Image (tube, rainbow, N blue to C red; front, side, top):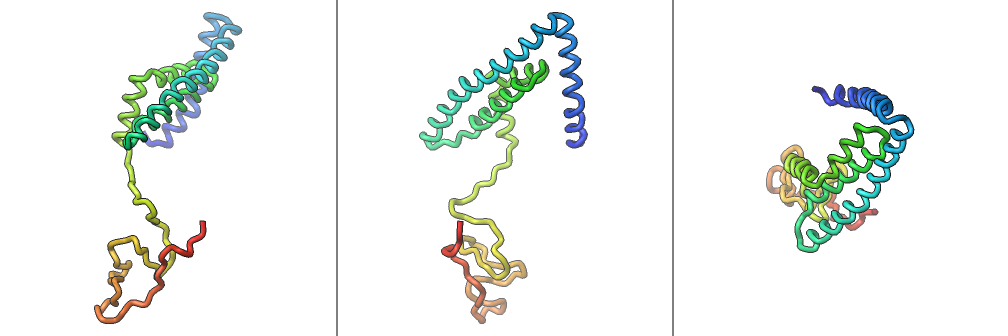
Length: 175
């Protein structure tokens, strides 16, 4: 299913599903208890965000202090925020999804899947990947050839003529 169609169905289908569930729950328990239940789930979501979020922040901090990358814990933190937002949105379907994300084993499994499927780009500290214009050489790079194949190690394309291009050592960069 194309992502655009999925988003369209979510935008149209989720509110319709929420209305249907509201009507069904309201007809079973009444209008006032339905509204109170919706308010209670919003309050519960904010409390659970505070409790589980602080616990997760402590875990992330301890992993960073040990020199480990807390990738899965960061994903779990993002899922806790998503769960809280789902609980704050009025509706029983979003509340059910939000409550499921607050279950630690389920959240950990989802975070593991997300981390496993994530594409990570590691950038060396201080490295810049911006294009600085034609004729500018990035001194941090090991491959000193420009786009047309000329060697930029100090010699021209024929190997004898010194290259006289602009050299940018990064000292004149402004924040």
